[in-house]
Amino acid sequence: MPSVDIVPCGKCGAPVTWARTESDRAMPLDVDSNPFGNVVILATQRGLRAHVLKAGDPAPSVEERRMPHFATCNGKPRRWPVLTVLSAERRD
Ligand SMILES: [Zn+2]
Image 1 (cartoon, helix red, strand yellow):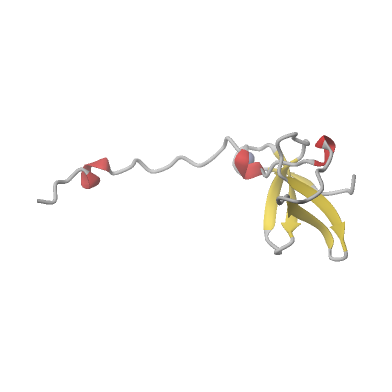
Image 2 (tube, rainbow, N blue to C red; image 1 turned 90 degrees about the vertical axis):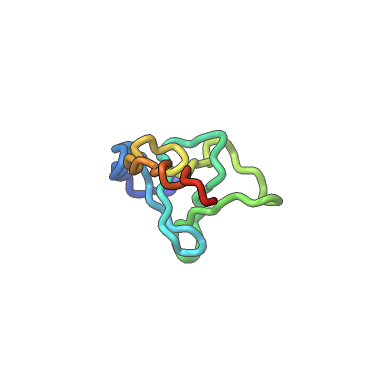
């Protein structure tokens, strides 16, 4: 496994790996492999890249599969209360 930096998630504190996607966006990944993960880390000419699996890609082994951390993060900031009063106003 290529070596990657592991840092705590700023929201929930879980260890995550920040990887760059092929479109050069930063993506947090769970450190542990996940059989349902849809991301693999590939060593490319531009360095390690998070590759989101697409239909037709060769199936990676379970150990190579990673889950984007935003799919599993449980430390999401609290949402503001939804202002249902406004949407319930009659318009007629
Ligand atoms: Zn988190």
